[in-house]
Image (cartoon, rainbow over all chains, first blue to last red; front, side, top):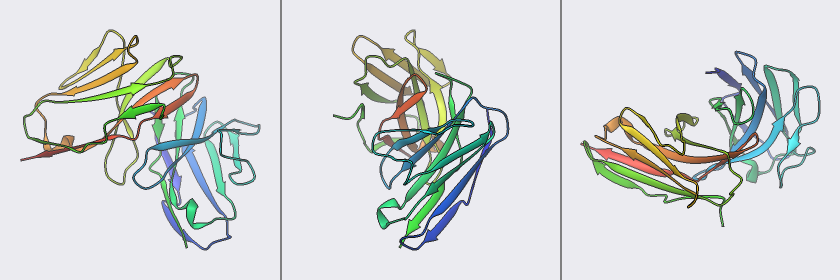
Length: 114
Length: 108
């Protein structure tokens, strides 16, 4: 299974600022994803990070708010832009070997926006 | 209606008990199914994949009924360490859809 790291592990941010979260995978994965998990709720897919091209966003999520980069197979970033308290959540990245393959998750980034 | 529905619980059971979780999914195009386990303040971790023929991994047995769009997880001889939230997951293409999870608390 892939080992996935994220940083920062947590942060407290002021309203209106932006935070970039980094995700590093220890082996090449075909697919990388970004999820959000709000308190007491399950995971919601934000987008699929595509290597070398624009991410594919799910309904309700837009590039201006959550710009994503994936410059190579093992690294991706998610930026939470112009943050508001409603963005307080856990953000998780995951990787998989391909379509219908198991996804493995990073430890998550806990974000609190004041 | 949520795409993957689970009873949120909590299920409070004594050590050694057998407990079963059920889950339904609404997307008939779903092709893959999983149970993930999530401990408090941790990331989800794969517990097992679920196949139509059913599969067993030690004390854990998973079943899939495609006709009823129903997935189950059976845990035998519960351990204190089994206490966690169990997430039912359906997948189509490269996307996973997570249920809200079922909380299990095993007590001595």
